[in-house]
Image 1 (cartoon, one colour):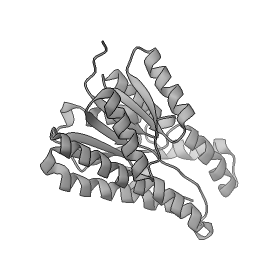
Image 2: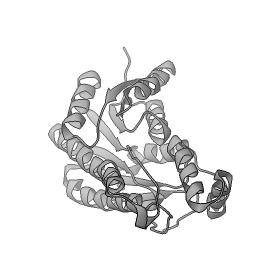
Image 3: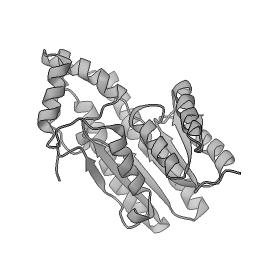
Image 4: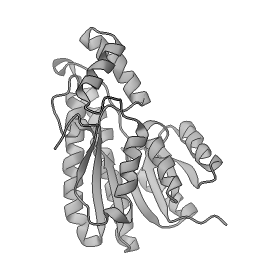
Length: 260
């Protein structure tokens, strides 16, 4: 019989940062719920984790729909037992000049990136409170949640600043229940999302994608693009006992692009 140290739910876990987080938490000994709107990709991620003799299963989730979030969590608890950790990682992006941004772009970014962690946080927190065993929540924010001076992403910046503020408010209110809430703020990460953004930004700047990459490298003191695993390591730490007295923090994981 497989043993594990509890259920960890990761949203947006089918690819990119979420996939790396799911893989790392499975390696840490959690039973991981690979939760994503893209059910086929989520299933592939979970299958890859199981192939490494670790514990994972995929679950369909829409982080803008509370009923969907609750259903995914209930299903995961039925399979793996009590919730120990929740990672709100699902996110989207589009790019445009501020004056050309549409209401649709604003709504999509704010719904997924800000309302998503709000709704997921509510569902996770209520479950932790009912279990009465404490708990840990990590929200994926962004470099764009700390620095507004990022081109073509005003709506995304607004959504990620919201995540940082939400994280602090959640941490303050949930502390009495022994629930810690923190955020990670990645920088220029090599993911499918970044690949799309490189094309968009290159077109908006009138340069090539390679020139955009060089701009990113020039801004990064550690002189390389970030990997999803770089983020996953910090999430792993925040969910560990070593971080039991850390709450309300938004940790910059960006190679020095933004220091605070």
